[in-house]
Image (tube, rainbow, N blue to C red; front, side, top):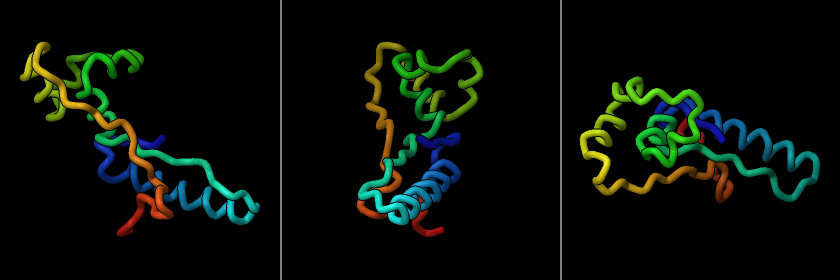
Length: 104
């Protein structure tokens, strides 16, 4: 699992590089399938914006720190009773033989 702040650059790029590497190693060693590599969609900011069901898994979570980011501002402005959007947690980096590093 790879991620960065928003998973728009570093996280997917690193996941793609790693997916390529393990696919090459698996092929070289005759392993039919390589392990799956994932990118956290929306990065850590998206995870935090998902609400309490996600922030409960963040050690030392300090809500006030995260208010500076747009993703979490929008969430706090809706209020606690407003319906939350579903957060897609992962996106495969190496699905269909196509890694996340397209366009590198």
